[in-house]
Image (cartoon, rainbow, N blue to C red; front, side):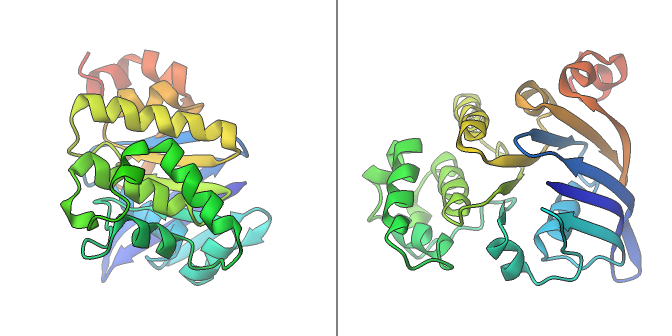
Length: 233
């Protein structure tokens, strides 16, 4: 579904991605784990179109997206839930969700919203409240639900567990895993390596802008190098 070939990206003269290769097959949950500053968020921004690519190619569902604007990538079914949630804090929960569906005007939008409320019942309860008043966990739920309102074939999730209590983290990962049954393919970027690998099919390890390891998630969890460097074991 998604293929990344030799992607490089820079901020000014400083290159932060150094030829990244990666693939995500339809129906998979694939995770990219690594320390803070490894380039994981920059990679997702390159995929969603909010960070320019200086070299390499990105293909999605058979089409090259390397220079396609971000809104057209969303139209083709590639959506992102960004790091830090980036919800519209001065708008209501429902308004945030409707903005996630800005590409659509059909009656299915209301059904999509009901699906979001079924996935995250607390959002139904708070649908008319200002999103800035939600807790951190509730804001993360809203960010994911808003991305799903775009009806993605592939969802890019950037650090969904960041700053959340363990109980909420477990709930978020449970929802991410459940999206597989909804035919949503997922590329998950996480510092919580164990939690991400536990629900993923395959994983990539990123260090200083490069992929240094890849393999089935179960094998990465069992690898002594991963256990020592990222799992604290």
